Image (cartoon, rainbow, N blue to C red; front, side, top):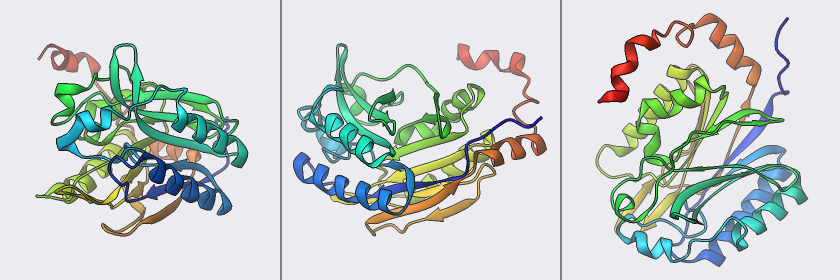
Length: 275
């Protein structure tokens, strides 16, 4: 007997230009996009990394100065919005915890409750100096299926999404502030496709666009299928909402055909944890 899966549903990825240190303006813009996505039938709406503060890698202390606790104004506003619209909402912010500030994605359910949080486990650049890093890889069981999350640079590490997959994840969300310089735009595409195919999961990656200081962000938000196909994508510079359909039943179908997860020889991989 086949497992029961949620019906296919629409996901919305909000690719927006987030003004640095302009929290109120960014939240207003995000609210407008979330309402638009809900009006178009989206059941899950995702915002990019640090959507409320904007992102500038050369000024991590600036972003930290605007960090909030989970019960602060941004997540409170987003929770009220999710409940009002009846949508799941991923809201990534710089979050205050007892051990410091973390780069955190907050998943809010369609009743306005926090379904879970994930903090970036692989800080990049000056984040390594200033931020506390996450140390866990939760998978959230929801009415939309089993959802995991990694943030931006995390997706460069195959182990991150593999941990989520072996814990049951069927959809992995990737909020990002991914830069466009050097070969980064191509690196973005390759990492997303590989993480999807390696683990036979949907990957929904929402990147910001626009400039911040001397940094330009790469956009290219995209939904990848469980075999690494790019199902839908946006360009580099455009602001807007990318819509796509997630069909959790396809994950089971692809895993029946492609047996890479069940064929692993985990005993051979023990040295990885010792290096």
